[in-house]
Length: 439
Image (cartoon, rainbow, N blue to C red; front, side):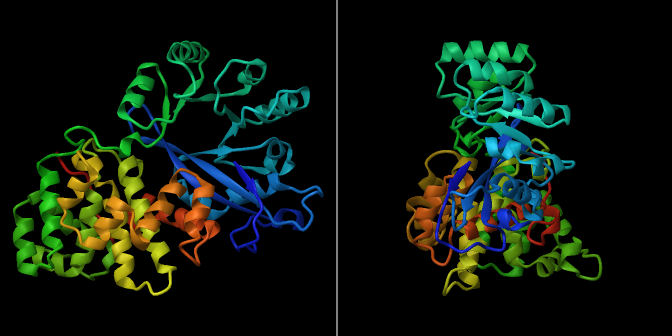
Protein backbone atom coordinates (compact mmCIF):
# COMPACT_ATOMS: atom_id res chain seq x y z
CA UNK A 1 0.00 0.00 0.00
CA UNK A 2 1.17 3.50 -0.75
CA UNK A 3 0.56 6.39 1.69
CA UNK A 4 1.74 9.77 0.49
CA UNK A 5 0.79 13.43 0.47
CA UNK A 6 0.38 15.58 -2.61
CA UNK A 7 -0.84 19.09 -3.29
CA UNK A 8 -3.65 18.17 -5.67
CA UNK A 9 -7.13 18.91 -4.30
CA UNK A 10 -9.30 15.90 -3.45
CA UNK A 11 -11.33 14.47 -6.32
CA UNK A 12 -14.92 13.29 -6.18
CA UNK A 13 -13.56 9.73 -6.12
CA UNK A 14 -12.05 10.21 -2.66
CA UNK A 15 -13.46 8.06 0.09
CA UNK A 16 -16.39 9.88 1.67
CA UNK A 17 -18.05 9.74 5.08
CA UNK A 18 -17.34 12.03 8.01
CA UNK A 19 -14.79 14.82 7.96
CA UNK A 20 -11.98 12.62 9.28
CA UNK A 21 -12.51 10.17 6.44
CA UNK A 22 -13.16 12.65 3.64
CA UNK A 23 -9.75 14.22 4.18
CA UNK A 24 -8.16 11.19 2.56
CA UNK A 25 -8.12 10.35 -1.12
CA UNK A 26 -7.98 6.68 -2.05
CA UNK A 27 -7.49 5.13 -5.45
CA UNK A 28 -6.58 1.71 -6.73
CA UNK A 29 -4.54 -0.25 -9.20
CA UNK A 30 -5.52 -3.82 -10.11
CA UNK A 31 -3.32 -6.88 -10.66
CA UNK A 32 -4.59 -10.28 -11.86
CA UNK A 33 -4.09 -13.60 -10.15
CA UNK A 34 -4.36 -16.82 -12.13
CA UNK A 35 -5.18 -20.32 -10.97
CA UNK A 36 -3.28 -23.51 -11.83
CA UNK A 37 -5.06 -23.70 -15.19
CA UNK A 38 -3.93 -20.19 -16.15
CA UNK A 39 -7.43 -18.78 -15.73
CA UNK A 40 -8.26 -15.55 -13.90
CA UNK A 41 -9.32 -16.29 -10.33
CA UNK A 42 -9.02 -12.96 -8.50
CA UNK A 43 -7.57 -9.46 -8.51
CA UNK A 44 -5.33 -7.79 -5.99
CA UNK A 45 -6.48 -4.22 -5.45
CA UNK A 46 -3.43 -2.07 -4.69
CA UNK A 47 -4.54 1.08 -2.86
CA UNK A 48 -2.87 4.44 -2.66
CA UNK A 49 -4.06 6.54 0.28
CA UNK A 50 -3.26 10.25 0.05
CA UNK A 51 -3.46 12.30 3.23
CA UNK A 52 -5.09 15.70 2.56
CA UNK A 53 -5.39 16.80 6.18
CA UNK A 54 -4.18 20.24 7.20
CA UNK A 55 -2.44 18.75 10.24
CA UNK A 56 -1.18 15.21 9.56
CA UNK A 57 -0.02 14.95 13.19
CA UNK A 58 -3.60 14.81 14.45
CA UNK A 59 -5.35 11.42 14.63
CA UNK A 60 -6.98 10.43 11.37
CA UNK A 61 -8.99 7.54 10.00
CA UNK A 62 -7.11 6.34 6.96
CA UNK A 63 -8.37 2.82 7.65
CA UNK A 64 -11.99 3.94 7.49
CA UNK A 65 -11.24 5.85 4.29
CA UNK A 66 -9.82 2.70 2.71
CA UNK A 67 -12.87 0.64 3.74
CA UNK A 68 -15.22 3.23 2.26
CA UNK A 69 -13.20 3.51 -0.94
CA UNK A 70 -13.07 -0.24 -1.48
CA UNK A 71 -16.86 -0.36 -1.28
CA UNK A 72 -17.33 2.28 -3.98
CA UNK A 73 -19.28 0.93 -6.99
CA UNK A 74 -16.47 1.51 -9.49
CA UNK A 75 -14.02 -0.54 -7.42
CA UNK A 76 -16.47 -3.39 -7.01
CA UNK A 77 -17.31 -3.29 -10.73
CA UNK A 78 -13.61 -3.50 -11.63
CA UNK A 79 -13.44 -6.91 -9.94
CA UNK A 80 -15.86 -8.16 -12.65
CA UNK A 81 -17.21 -10.88 -10.39
CA UNK A 82 -13.82 -12.11 -9.19
CA UNK A 83 -12.58 -12.22 -5.62
CA UNK A 84 -10.70 -9.16 -4.39
CA UNK A 85 -7.46 -9.23 -2.42
CA UNK A 86 -6.63 -6.03 -0.55
CA UNK A 87 -3.37 -4.73 0.92
CA UNK A 88 -4.06 -3.48 4.43
CA UNK A 89 -2.25 -1.81 7.34
CA UNK A 90 -2.38 -2.20 11.09
CA UNK A 91 -4.50 0.96 11.28
CA UNK A 92 -6.96 -0.51 8.81
CA UNK A 93 -7.40 -3.67 10.91
CA UNK A 94 -8.18 -1.71 14.05
CA UNK A 95 -10.71 0.66 12.50
CA UNK A 96 -14.18 -0.54 13.49
CA UNK A 97 -15.59 0.47 10.10
CA UNK A 98 -14.03 -2.79 8.94
CA UNK A 99 -16.62 -4.66 10.99
CA UNK A 100 -19.39 -3.32 8.78
CA UNK A 101 -18.11 -4.99 5.63
CA UNK A 102 -20.85 -7.24 4.34
CA UNK A 103 -20.78 -9.97 1.67
CA UNK A 104 -18.04 -10.03 -0.92
CA UNK A 105 -15.31 -9.20 1.57
CA UNK A 106 -11.79 -9.15 0.19
CA UNK A 107 -8.95 -11.39 1.26
CA UNK A 108 -6.98 -9.08 3.58
CA UNK A 109 -3.23 -9.13 2.92
CA UNK A 110 -1.10 -8.60 6.04
CA UNK A 111 2.33 -7.01 5.43
CA UNK A 112 5.43 -8.66 6.85
CA UNK A 113 6.13 -5.69 9.14
CA UNK A 114 2.68 -5.59 10.76
CA UNK A 115 3.98 -7.17 13.97
CA UNK A 116 2.45 -9.96 16.03
CA UNK A 117 1.93 -8.52 19.50
CA UNK A 118 -0.92 -9.64 21.78
CA UNK A 119 -3.18 -6.77 20.68
CA UNK A 120 -2.87 -7.60 16.98
CA UNK A 121 -3.32 -11.33 17.54
CA UNK A 122 -6.46 -10.64 19.59
CA UNK A 123 -7.82 -8.50 16.78
CA UNK A 124 -7.13 -11.21 14.21
CA UNK A 125 -8.88 -13.74 16.45
CA UNK A 126 -11.91 -11.44 16.62
CA UNK A 127 -12.01 -10.85 12.86
CA UNK A 128 -11.30 -14.50 12.09
CA UNK A 129 -14.30 -15.41 14.22
CA UNK A 130 -16.40 -13.16 12.02
CA UNK A 131 -15.13 -15.02 8.95
CA UNK A 132 -12.71 -12.41 7.71
CA UNK A 133 -9.97 -14.01 5.63
CA UNK A 134 -6.26 -13.23 5.72
CA UNK A 135 -3.17 -13.76 3.60
CA UNK A 136 0.42 -13.24 4.70
CA UNK A 137 2.08 -11.02 2.12
CA UNK A 138 5.66 -11.13 0.82
CA UNK A 139 6.75 -13.93 3.13
CA UNK A 140 10.46 -14.71 2.81
CA UNK A 141 11.32 -16.39 6.10
CA UNK A 142 9.73 -18.40 8.87
CA UNK A 143 10.36 -15.96 11.72
CA UNK A 144 8.45 -15.44 14.98
CA UNK A 145 5.91 -13.07 13.43
CA UNK A 146 5.19 -15.56 10.66
CA UNK A 147 4.68 -18.38 13.19
CA UNK A 148 2.24 -16.32 15.29
CA UNK A 149 0.15 -15.12 12.34
CA UNK A 150 0.10 -18.33 10.28
CA UNK A 151 -2.79 -19.98 12.19
CA UNK A 152 -5.11 -17.13 11.12
CA UNK A 153 -3.94 -17.00 7.49
CA UNK A 154 -5.75 -18.84 4.75
CA UNK A 155 -3.11 -17.97 2.15
CA UNK A 156 0.60 -17.21 1.99
CA UNK A 157 2.15 -15.05 -0.75
CA UNK A 158 5.78 -15.74 -1.66
CA UNK A 159 7.96 -13.89 -4.16
CA UNK A 160 9.73 -16.59 -6.17
CA UNK A 161 12.85 -14.47 -6.50
CA UNK A 162 13.32 -13.65 -2.80
CA UNK A 163 13.83 -17.21 -1.53
CA UNK A 164 16.59 -19.63 -2.54
CA UNK A 165 15.24 -22.60 -4.55
CA UNK A 166 15.96 -25.26 -1.89
CA UNK A 167 14.22 -23.20 0.79
CA UNK A 168 11.34 -22.37 -1.58
CA UNK A 169 10.68 -26.05 -2.17
CA UNK A 170 10.73 -26.82 1.56
CA UNK A 171 8.54 -23.81 2.35
CA UNK A 172 5.98 -24.82 -0.26
CA UNK A 173 5.85 -28.42 0.95
CA UNK A 174 5.30 -27.47 4.60
CA UNK A 175 2.65 -24.85 3.84
CA UNK A 176 0.75 -27.11 1.44
CA UNK A 177 0.72 -29.80 4.15
CA UNK A 178 -0.79 -27.20 6.47
CA UNK A 179 -3.60 -26.60 3.98
CA UNK A 180 -2.62 -23.06 3.01
CA UNK A 181 -3.32 -21.46 -0.37
CA UNK A 182 0.06 -20.71 -1.90
CA UNK A 183 0.42 -17.63 -4.07
CA UNK A 184 3.51 -17.21 -6.24
CA UNK A 185 4.47 -13.58 -6.78
CA UNK A 186 6.83 -12.24 -9.43
CA UNK A 187 5.78 -14.79 -12.05
CA UNK A 188 7.15 -13.04 -15.12
CA UNK A 189 8.12 -15.94 -17.38
CA UNK A 190 6.83 -19.34 -18.40
CA UNK A 191 9.76 -20.87 -16.50
CA UNK A 192 8.62 -19.07 -13.33
CA UNK A 193 5.10 -20.43 -13.79
CA UNK A 194 6.27 -23.97 -14.53
CA UNK A 195 8.55 -23.99 -11.48
CA UNK A 196 5.89 -22.69 -9.10
CA UNK A 197 3.28 -25.00 -10.63
CA UNK A 198 5.53 -28.02 -10.01
CA UNK A 199 5.96 -26.95 -6.38
CA UNK A 200 2.19 -26.99 -5.88
CA UNK A 201 1.43 -23.26 -5.84
CA UNK A 202 -2.27 -22.50 -6.22
CA UNK A 203 -2.27 -18.90 -7.50
CA UNK A 204 0.12 -17.01 -9.73
CA UNK A 205 0.65 -13.24 -9.80
CA UNK A 206 2.70 -11.68 -12.57
CA UNK A 207 2.56 -11.08 -16.31
CA UNK A 208 4.06 -14.28 -17.69
CA UNK A 209 0.84 -14.87 -19.67
CA UNK A 210 1.42 -11.66 -21.64
CA UNK A 211 4.95 -12.63 -22.72
CA UNK A 212 5.77 -14.13 -26.14
CA UNK A 213 6.53 -17.83 -26.29
CA UNK A 214 8.70 -19.57 -28.85
CA UNK A 215 6.53 -20.21 -31.88
CA UNK A 216 3.63 -18.21 -30.48
CA UNK A 217 1.12 -19.49 -27.96
CA UNK A 218 -1.96 -19.03 -30.05
CA UNK A 219 -0.83 -19.35 -33.63
CA UNK A 220 -3.36 -21.35 -35.64
CA UNK A 221 -5.36 -21.31 -38.83
CA UNK A 222 -8.22 -19.25 -37.27
CA UNK A 223 -5.63 -16.86 -35.86
CA UNK A 224 -4.16 -16.37 -39.31
CA UNK A 225 -7.66 -15.70 -40.62
CA UNK A 226 -8.04 -12.96 -38.05
CA UNK A 227 -4.69 -11.49 -39.10
CA UNK A 228 -5.77 -11.48 -42.75
CA UNK A 229 -9.01 -9.77 -41.79
CA UNK A 230 -7.16 -7.12 -39.78
CA UNK A 231 -4.86 -6.40 -42.69
CA UNK A 232 -7.85 -5.99 -45.00
CA UNK A 233 -9.66 -3.74 -42.53
CA UNK A 234 -6.58 -1.50 -42.35
CA UNK A 235 -6.94 -0.79 -46.07
CA UNK A 236 -10.48 0.63 -45.77
CA UNK A 237 -12.17 -2.14 -47.80
CA UNK A 238 -15.48 -1.92 -49.54
CA UNK A 239 -18.38 -3.94 -48.18
CA UNK A 240 -17.97 -6.33 -51.11
CA UNK A 241 -14.27 -6.91 -50.32
CA UNK A 242 -14.98 -7.45 -46.64
CA UNK A 243 -17.82 -9.81 -47.44
CA UNK A 244 -15.58 -11.85 -49.73
CA UNK A 245 -12.85 -12.17 -47.08
CA UNK A 246 -15.27 -13.17 -44.37
CA UNK A 247 -16.91 -15.81 -46.56
CA UNK A 248 -13.58 -17.63 -46.72
CA UNK A 249 -13.91 -18.24 -42.97
CA UNK A 250 -17.28 -19.64 -41.85
CA UNK A 251 -16.41 -19.24 -38.16
CA UNK A 252 -15.85 -15.51 -38.66
CA UNK A 253 -19.13 -15.23 -40.55
CA UNK A 254 -20.89 -16.73 -37.53
CA UNK A 255 -19.26 -14.21 -35.20
CA UNK A 256 -20.17 -11.21 -37.36
CA UNK A 257 -23.78 -12.39 -37.59
CA UNK A 258 -23.95 -12.75 -33.82
CA UNK A 259 -22.35 -9.36 -33.35
CA UNK A 260 -24.85 -7.68 -35.69
CA UNK A 261 -27.81 -9.37 -34.01
CA UNK A 262 -26.77 -8.38 -30.49
CA UNK A 263 -29.21 -6.04 -28.76
CA UNK A 264 -26.46 -3.40 -28.52
CA UNK A 265 -27.04 -2.30 -32.12
CA UNK A 266 -30.82 -1.97 -32.01
CA UNK A 267 -31.27 -2.90 -35.65
CA UNK A 268 -34.94 -3.58 -34.97
CA UNK A 269 -35.08 -6.85 -36.88
CA UNK A 270 -33.04 -10.01 -37.23
CA UNK A 271 -30.09 -9.65 -39.59
CA UNK A 272 -30.12 -12.56 -42.04
CA UNK A 273 -27.35 -11.84 -44.57
CA UNK A 274 -23.65 -11.20 -44.17
CA UNK A 275 -23.79 -7.97 -46.17
CA UNK A 276 -26.56 -6.68 -43.93
CA UNK A 277 -24.54 -7.71 -40.86
CA UNK A 278 -21.50 -5.78 -42.11
CA UNK A 279 -23.58 -2.68 -42.75
CA UNK A 280 -25.30 -2.93 -39.37
CA UNK A 281 -22.09 -3.49 -37.43
CA UNK A 282 -19.73 -1.15 -39.26
CA UNK A 283 -16.11 -1.75 -40.12
CA UNK A 284 -14.83 0.09 -37.02
CA UNK A 285 -16.65 -2.24 -34.65
CA UNK A 286 -15.70 -5.30 -36.66
CA UNK A 287 -12.07 -4.17 -36.48
CA UNK A 288 -12.18 -3.77 -32.70
CA UNK A 289 -13.89 -7.12 -32.30
CA UNK A 290 -11.24 -8.76 -34.48
CA UNK A 291 -8.39 -7.12 -32.55
CA UNK A 292 -9.73 -8.42 -29.24
CA UNK A 293 -10.52 -11.85 -30.65
CA UNK A 294 -6.81 -12.26 -31.44
CA UNK A 295 -6.24 -12.76 -27.72
CA UNK A 296 -9.04 -15.24 -27.07
CA UNK A 297 -7.77 -18.50 -25.65
CA UNK A 298 -8.71 -21.64 -27.54
CA UNK A 299 -9.65 -23.57 -24.39
CA UNK A 300 -13.27 -22.42 -24.13
CA UNK A 301 -12.39 -20.11 -21.25
CA UNK A 302 -15.09 -17.57 -20.42
CA UNK A 303 -14.22 -14.09 -21.68
CA UNK A 304 -14.16 -12.56 -18.22
CA UNK A 305 -11.73 -15.28 -17.07
CA UNK A 306 -9.30 -15.01 -20.01
CA UNK A 307 -6.29 -13.14 -18.56
CA UNK A 308 -4.64 -11.99 -21.79
CA UNK A 309 -7.87 -10.86 -23.45
CA UNK A 310 -8.86 -8.99 -20.27
CA UNK A 311 -5.47 -7.31 -19.98
CA UNK A 312 -5.43 -6.24 -23.64
CA UNK A 313 -9.03 -5.04 -23.58
CA UNK A 314 -8.52 -3.11 -20.33
CA UNK A 315 -5.36 -1.41 -21.60
CA UNK A 316 -6.96 -0.52 -24.92
CA UNK A 317 -10.08 0.97 -23.33
CA UNK A 318 -7.98 2.81 -20.74
CA UNK A 319 -5.86 4.39 -23.44
CA UNK A 320 -8.93 5.43 -25.41
CA UNK A 321 -10.48 7.03 -22.32
CA UNK A 322 -7.20 8.70 -21.33
CA UNK A 323 -6.70 10.11 -24.82
CA UNK A 324 -10.16 11.67 -24.63
CA UNK A 325 -8.97 13.71 -21.64
CA UNK A 326 -6.03 15.24 -23.48
CA UNK A 327 -6.27 18.54 -25.28
CA UNK A 328 -6.58 18.44 -29.07
CA UNK A 329 -7.47 14.73 -29.02
CA UNK A 330 -10.34 13.95 -31.35
CA UNK A 331 -12.05 10.73 -32.35
CA UNK A 332 -9.16 9.69 -34.59
CA UNK A 333 -6.64 10.06 -31.77
CA UNK A 334 -8.86 8.07 -29.42
CA UNK A 335 -9.20 5.29 -31.99
CA UNK A 336 -5.42 5.27 -32.45
CA UNK A 337 -4.98 5.03 -28.68
CA UNK A 338 -7.31 2.03 -28.50
CA UNK A 339 -5.47 0.35 -31.37
CA UNK A 340 -2.05 0.95 -29.82
CA UNK A 341 -3.26 -0.45 -26.52
CA UNK A 342 -4.91 -3.56 -27.86
CA UNK A 343 -2.02 -4.46 -30.17
CA UNK A 344 0.74 -3.76 -27.65
CA UNK A 345 0.56 -7.43 -26.63
CA UNK A 346 0.54 -8.86 -30.14
CA UNK A 347 3.94 -10.53 -29.67
CA UNK A 348 2.28 -12.79 -27.07
CA UNK A 349 0.00 -14.08 -29.84
CA UNK A 350 2.49 -14.68 -32.63
CA UNK A 351 5.76 -15.06 -30.71
CA UNK A 352 9.12 -13.64 -31.69
CA UNK A 353 10.26 -10.02 -31.35
CA UNK A 354 7.62 -7.33 -30.85
CA UNK A 355 8.83 -5.46 -33.95
CA UNK A 356 8.22 -8.46 -36.19
CA UNK A 357 4.78 -9.10 -34.74
CA UNK A 358 3.76 -5.46 -35.19
CA UNK A 359 5.04 -5.41 -38.75
CA UNK A 360 2.68 -8.28 -39.61
CA UNK A 361 -0.21 -5.88 -38.99
CA UNK A 362 1.14 -3.09 -41.24
CA UNK A 363 0.38 -0.38 -38.70
CA UNK A 364 0.88 3.32 -39.29
CA UNK A 365 4.17 4.91 -38.31
CA UNK A 366 2.82 6.71 -35.21
CA UNK A 367 1.17 3.63 -33.73
CA UNK A 368 4.14 1.42 -34.54
CA UNK A 369 6.55 3.90 -32.91
CA UNK A 370 4.35 4.03 -29.82
CA UNK A 371 4.22 0.24 -29.43
CA UNK A 372 7.82 -0.56 -30.29
CA UNK A 373 9.70 2.51 -29.05
CA UNK A 374 7.16 4.18 -26.71
CA UNK A 375 7.42 7.39 -28.69
CA UNK A 376 4.95 10.27 -28.72
CA UNK A 377 1.78 10.75 -26.69
CA UNK A 378 0.62 7.22 -27.47
CA UNK A 379 3.93 5.89 -26.16
CA UNK A 380 3.45 7.83 -22.93
CA UNK A 381 -0.08 6.48 -22.59
CA UNK A 382 1.32 2.97 -22.93
CA UNK A 383 3.90 3.78 -20.25
CA UNK A 384 1.31 5.04 -17.79
CA UNK A 385 -0.98 2.08 -18.55
CA UNK A 386 1.82 -0.35 -17.76
CA UNK A 387 2.77 1.52 -14.57
CA UNK A 388 -0.84 1.42 -13.41
CA UNK A 389 -1.11 -2.30 -14.16
CA UNK A 390 1.84 -2.89 -11.83
CA UNK A 391 0.73 -0.46 -9.15
CA UNK A 392 3.92 1.60 -9.59
CA UNK A 393 2.53 4.89 -8.31
CA UNK A 394 5.80 6.83 -8.47
CA UNK A 395 6.11 5.88 -12.13
CA UNK A 396 2.47 6.87 -12.73
CA UNK A 397 3.24 10.32 -11.24
CA UNK A 398 6.34 10.65 -13.39
CA UNK A 399 4.59 9.87 -16.68
CA UNK A 400 1.55 11.97 -15.82
CA UNK A 401 3.75 15.05 -15.70
CA UNK A 402 3.90 14.70 -19.48
CA UNK A 403 0.19 13.99 -19.89
CA UNK A 404 -1.52 17.03 -18.36
CA UNK A 405 -4.27 17.34 -17.26
CA UNK A 406 -4.10 13.63 -16.32
CA UNK A 407 -2.80 12.82 -12.86
CA UNK A 408 -2.58 9.64 -10.80
CA UNK A 409 -6.10 9.98 -9.40
CA UNK A 410 -7.64 10.49 -12.82
CA UNK A 411 -5.58 7.64 -14.30
CA UNK A 412 -6.68 5.27 -11.53
CA UNK A 413 -10.32 6.20 -12.06
CA UNK A 414 -10.06 5.58 -15.80
CA UNK A 415 -8.33 2.28 -15.08
CA UNK A 416 -11.30 1.07 -13.03
CA UNK A 417 -13.73 2.18 -15.73
CA UNK A 418 -11.71 0.36 -18.38
CA UNK A 419 -11.56 -2.78 -16.22
CA UNK A 420 -15.32 -2.86 -15.88
CA UNK A 421 -15.74 -2.39 -19.64
CA UNK A 422 -13.37 -5.24 -20.42
CA UNK A 423 -14.93 -7.59 -17.89
CA UNK A 424 -18.46 -7.05 -19.12
CA UNK A 425 -17.85 -7.73 -22.79
CA UNK A 426 -21.40 -8.77 -23.55
CA UNK A 427 -22.66 -5.31 -22.55
CA UNK A 428 -20.47 -3.46 -25.01
CA UNK A 429 -21.32 -2.84 -28.63
CA UNK A 430 -17.72 -3.26 -29.71
CA UNK A 431 -17.32 -6.59 -27.93
CA UNK A 432 -20.84 -8.02 -28.04
CA UNK A 433 -20.94 -11.37 -29.72
CA UNK A 434 -17.37 -12.31 -28.85
CA UNK A 435 -17.25 -16.08 -28.76
CA UNK A 436 -14.53 -18.68 -28.63
CA UNK A 437 -12.90 -19.75 -31.84
CA UNK A 438 -13.19 -23.47 -32.44
CA UNK A 439 -9.52 -24.15 -32.95
